[in-house]
Image 1 (cartoon, rainbow, N blue to C red):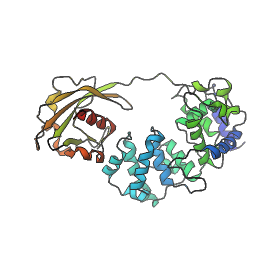
Image 2: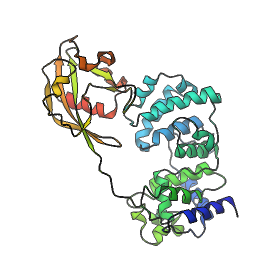
Image 3: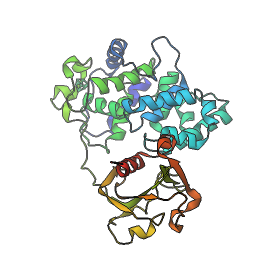
Image 4: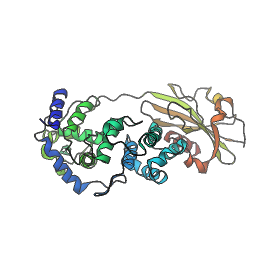
Length: 379
Ligand code: SF4
């Protein structure tokens, strides 16, 4: 029995009974690769046919693409490559500069891990990426998906990355009815049975492209799909309902108050967040702690303002959704005298005044960009 067939066998035994066995799993790869050769997406990080693949570009794009759309990643990816064209350049960069360039992309631990990983690749591997999934997995910030994606795409190693697109295609091909997230192991096992022994990088990217352009979440275009005749989800008329999802978990709400102090010279008071925790070392306007169920309208919010001033409560609130909670921020604004003294609440050692026109050069996370925009509306 071949390794692929063995994997398929094991997968069938361990998977839920809802999975349909494909008649000819080995026929999927040739069909999909032929489709990919005609229809592949032109993406900035993707080597053109016949061009060598740059592992640094693959790794950078895969880290950026986690939880983020290709459209949002495009400009960030280009900017990073312009500033840091090699892993050596990135390793030598200042972390705050990296965080600033990353600002707006979210999930900032990725940026810090990117920097740590670049340093390890330079110090321990002489600037060359390790080529196997197992070695890649040992690097900072590289999880099973990224290790498999870099191994397959950059080095054509036999590896099966499973992102959201591939999960969806696999759930439909095999008609896997187990809801996510419980189905993840079953999906990975099923997807691995499809991986060919050669062109593994192209195959992984073909699955991603099929999910992004044909096997789309709401209305899969089954009539033009190269895998239609193999697809159990299509055959049973349930494709659009797969993958199934477990009940949504309501995120708890945290609330706080943000203070936008504007100097008469147009500068804004900013503060660096603590070394650890959520948005560590990113830049913010001073705010109260973000606590469960505490409203910004409580009388003591102004008592922890960073400057004594005539604060004005900006109407409405700013909301932002993090992975584990939803944040609601009330916003106060004040125009303050130049060199107005900070209160002890401001933690002056972490504060700085930055002109409005220079805010783009600060590592302001999206939530703080929203707060500043909200406060400056109409000014
Ligand atoms: Fe997806 Fe339809 Fe193709 Fe099946 S036939 S893989 S559901 S697009």
